[in-house]
Picture 1 (cartoon, rainbow, N blue to C red):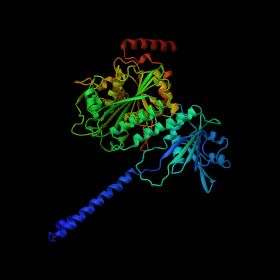
Picture 2: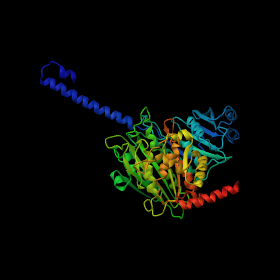
Picture 3: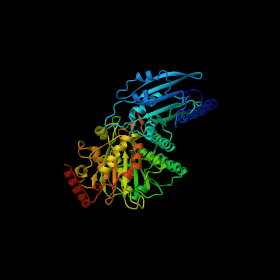
Picture 4: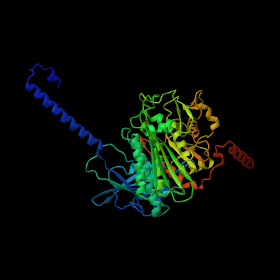
Length: 570
């Protein structure tokens, strides 16, 4: 183009003809390039299906047997029996586990046999499942494009569903990598052994399959890039869960408040955070009703599809990876689907409340010094737009606990899950989520559920009277970020959410900050799905704690009784 326009050749018809041809050729080239790029983006790599069976197929190209070293050595009818004991003996598990591989003749080729030894040591804060090592060993053994079988030899205290969740993490679903059109889908068959007996119970295997599917759903949501998993797409994921459950005969109702309807409805936190993004914010509610008397629970998830930090912009590379800021919502959605598919434990109702937004920047972005009003009625002076998760969850937990809003029946238990604070990783690290709870009984149940499922959690202080002053404002009920970053930031952030529970609500509340364990090696882990799933199933045994009440008079009675009991013990 530049050559033609600048050339000294006469302005003749031939020149115009050449220019026209070049323009048409360039347009066609651009169109073909677009099609090629489109194919590259949409081309599907081979998918991995997980199958749960009483016994693994004998002819799989890869067979991985995973368990403690002593258990593997004592295995009856192992693969490659002539070399099995020597293969296991060659492993030195250490703290991370270890594996050894051999090959055996199979048809016209060879089959790979892997002995994967879990770490021998398991401290009191770890899970007997050794989930991190289990995921890593299985993933390393069964990578590639061919079918595989996995045999999990379980120890006492490790359940097949929990093991299935750990194994599923090794096979994430999302990829945008190009694959060959003739790539075949593959199947990884998974079997369990407890002691010397294979697990063949259909209900147990169904629970394992549901747990694995839910973990992979949460992983896929977290792994999807923010130009795909925009707020409206996360809403669509919730709609798809509703449709899948309906197909299984589970009665699920749903509602969504979107965009300016949030502003008009008084959801100032969710509206304020997401109002300037191209895809509008939304409050998504799914409710499953079960035909029984029992307690009710609500899962409330932070679903920030991408977090720029807002006008308090993340700098120095801090914005990279912020597609994972919806890990709490992904875990809630996965746990909700699995729990409902398996009957909801002993609950009469289970709710899933997703607080969905993108914390973007623009002319209409939330500003520092703005004052917003939550659904609870409390006002908040913004002093950090990058502390946005607590703003959306404030509306979420208020919606869940305000009488007559979520359901005609009061919710007994609220569990909110969020990638809320970087301080959580300082407090409990990347393997343990931090939990803050107003109930001793629910806190203990959560810790035990974490150890049984492998979604490990550790309790942090719950003391509103010690943390409330961190958010003092001269012109509003509160600010949204602490004055002193050295004063238990994770507990303070959780307390901010707690303050927005309805003032008359007397149920149990658990906050799960999973900022650290929600991702590993730039991939979503599905953390929180198994934890919440088992917690839901066990809620019937969790009695409401008198100390959970927000009534000062009733709390005083409970505190007096607790002090008397403690004195008697001493």
